[in-house]
Image 1 (cartoon, rainbow, N blue to C red):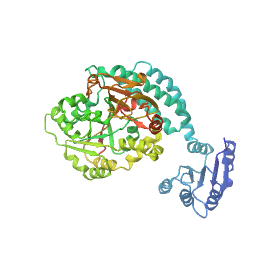
Image 2: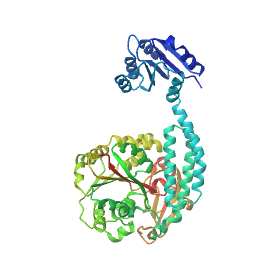
Image 3: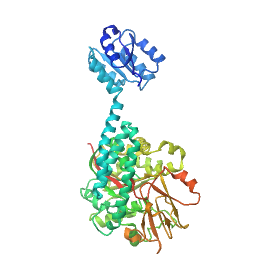
Image 4: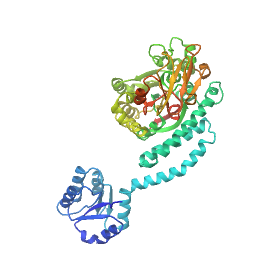
Length: 518
């Protein structure tokens, strides 16, 4: 490994020979100058310098002036300020100028070494520690996965997997990526087997997780009894890992009171899962109670046009007092700005429901636009894009306004999404649905190991478009392709984010309750 290049600027450099000798013995390459002008000249000529030690008090231009010029030209070059005192105004100015550390004269060699370790070696040390820790955890995770998890322990396991994924991302332990993703894929295969074995029994009133159609009754109603304005924010397509990257931002203004979960029903897509959340009914129940409000996949027309109606109907059934309810669906920038302008008016409501479609839109746009495929090429980039959007969104601006007033905030979703990589051929007639992660139709022909097939949809709370309708759900990272134009659509959809099928990412959904820090 090449030596780390250090530039040390100090007008008393001759007095620092012991420190310089110490650094050279430790394998560092140190260049010295006696003033700020020479420091700037050397940096102009030598782009290999990796850290600068800068005396605060030098003739000519001061250390702080030199620091300012260094940062204006080399913003990411680490600078350590060396000073004879810790005067508050000096340190405030230095910190405001983005110093990476400071040392007080006389400088102890071991202090210098610790500073270098922190600045230069920090990422490497964190990466190595993360890799070592994950190697130790790998076997434990494998044993847990093989131990016969139930619906509760699958959630805890999934959270552990996401914690490791985020930790590996932030530590740049890239050499662990393949091992981690192999383990995550194995987890999704086992989870798909678990869903295949248990899903239909949960619809027969056997013990199971809270599911989409039970969410409001089991989780939200108690909060409404407290008679505090409640904002129910549903971010379409929000995965648990995306919530975890948004959480630190939101924590600036809100306290997390409870981080819970629910299981999305199948298919894990908006038409089914979100209608189930707002109606408090399975899709089969919606079709039975509100036949004019339900459209099957093969019927023309919008499939989510009655959400506000469903919310109010469910509240009438569940709450004995009259509630003031307002509903917003944010589909574009104009809607978002309108919500931001009116957000404080929601404090006059008992319940405000906000459906925010950006993440779902991003997922679909990524499939269709090459530039977004580049920007969100994998899970790490997808999370980063979600975070960047949220930080600069009218939604975050609206939530910051709300955070200055008493209310309850719930953040949740209707389903997640998974990056698909394994094509699975299917043969179907022209009336079959176009979704890549589930199909409903007649006379479907498919590879049995890739799917959960439901021949009687009523057993899963689903409508039956006709007497011979079958639902098939893609498991883990599979996606359906027809034999016609197979290679064309393989290139189009492989490595894109899709939903509708069975995976940890699609089914296990966050449900987070917060209140403002006021």
